[in-house]
Amino acid sequence: MNSLTLNQAHQILQGAMQAARAAHYKPMGIVVLDESGQLVAFAREDGASMFRFDIARGKAWGAVGMGSSSRALAERAKDNPNFFVALAATAEGKFLPQPGAVLIKDAQGRILGSVGASGGTGDEDELICMAGIRAAGLVVG
Image 1 (cartoon, rainbow, N blue to C red):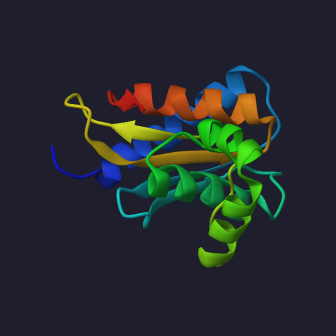
Image 2: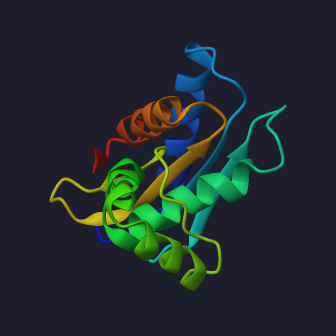
């Protein structure tokens, strides 16, 4: 497998939404990006606020762009805030180093893309992203 398919992206969205509903989280926005940061799929649950896409995409875009979960990026930003502010400006606002996005990998460990969520806490967002990746038979990075 060389790239993330639309079918896999839909499986990720479905698995993430199922996890969110099972946990009774607030309505979510979930985005799936490919390895180059391009949108593959997005879902916004009924009742989710208007910022959900932008926040989920910013988390996912940063994760795939930096090759690390957005949680790890948030930790790194604490020690080097100027770099991360400059990075966000360079990325024209598409970069958000906050927990809630993880990498999507294949069985060989290659990065296929990322999934980000917004609507709950960072921990909740991250958990549903991981559930979605696993539901698609892929590996959480």
